[in-house]
Length: 214
Image 1 (spheres, one colour):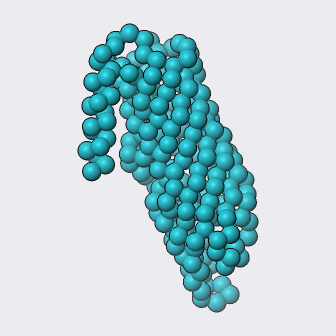
Image 2 (cartoon, rainbow, N blue to C red; image 1 turned 60 degrees about the vertical axis):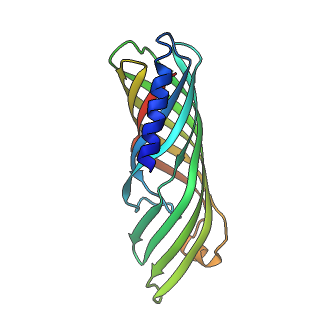
Image 3 (cartoon, rainbow, N blue to C red; image 1 turned 180 degrees about the vertical axis):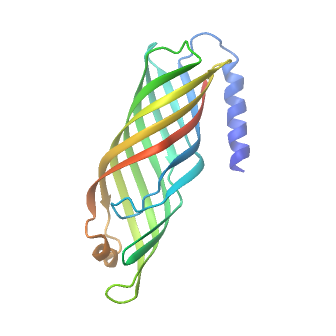
């Protein structure tokens, strides 16, 4: 179903792009692939890298030949698994990332070109699952927490320009910000130690995007 919706959106945007071969002011971006850390409630990097598909969409406005403004949303990974030391976390996540950003492009005349982007990021998610721990005694702790993440995200994008106002964009991103975990499940706090902390995360492929100018 998701693939059918994506194909329909791409065909619609492509049809709109054909109406104007002149300078396009607006664009729609479909994020079809992401590879990066899938974080649960802990602040360390013991989580496994994951891949998500058809994870988001963004709308852009071209202010000038060099500057673009963007607003977008994308779905957070659904499941994470972490096992370090005495405990193992298995979490199901329901949530989204919202971002607003500005992008600088020196020139779009070449077949391949780079662009540089800075986003303000807000993530809001509900976590449910369990901690399995054997210290000091075997124990199962239920997870029922909400998590917010406020960050900035500088990124570098490699753009592949195609005819008919279509680009394919491959991006990498660094996220720096603060995480806050709501105390819905008090028993979890013992294993987290910190419910508010600084987090830095690198996404090797933050987006593989099909961008259609309309």
